[in-house]
Length: 318
Image 1 (cartoon, rainbow, N blue to C red):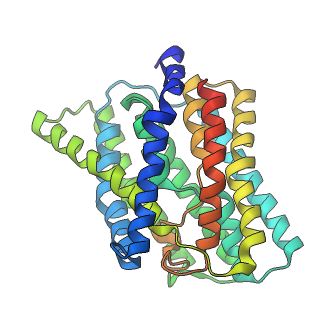
Image 2 (spheres, rainbow, N blue to C red; image 1 turned 30 degrees about the vertical axis):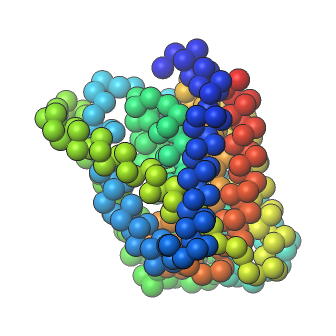
């Protein structure tokens, strides 16, 4: 995509894209508050997204683009270095705060894990399919990478060799059996073999994708329940700052250093400014989104992220 066409997005994005996305998230919050959706809905809708809808989308968006280039390898390095620096800072801070192992594990996760639902929706509505394809391929690397860090954190922080009632070796295997990851790999194989799909199947994929992102945003809003554990407020504010403020700054600086394409700046920096949300199976049982133990982290992170994304949208797409 040309730089001029990407930059022109900034002129209308707040009115036509970013605000409507935030409004749908607010609808999800209202639905939760008035009882139209509850914790069970969030739980099972999240499973539906991760096991069926998102794998279908990843396969289609990756397989449907033929002879398309991927992000430069330096973009992957920028992402790795940024996440690792934040992770190391979080490990240092838990020594400073001297919190319990449980809170330390939640805090470290809140510093680098991202809201996949919000991020995919934002990139999908902002950019063209070829940019979305590159971004999804990047996620095929980032998703297992952050899950691996979670497993490492369980051992080093919790001194626990189980996550989600599974031993660590089983959790490692679960990471690479992620339906999104497998579907994305199949999409890459289909694209490399230049396999074409009939029109009706492509249309089916398009219809499915049209329902994925509104549902994802409602789930995001429904998961933002008001925190009840006041003692977490200071720690959650620090985590939100690391995740939504410092991390996009780091990835921006690394991208500046490595000088990749403009597409990488627009998509990757925005994605790294996203709020924290636990939504993947590798940790969803360890920290259930129906419970209170992560609510203050995700809620404060979402609030700070709104201003962070607004700033980066203005700064990058002006």
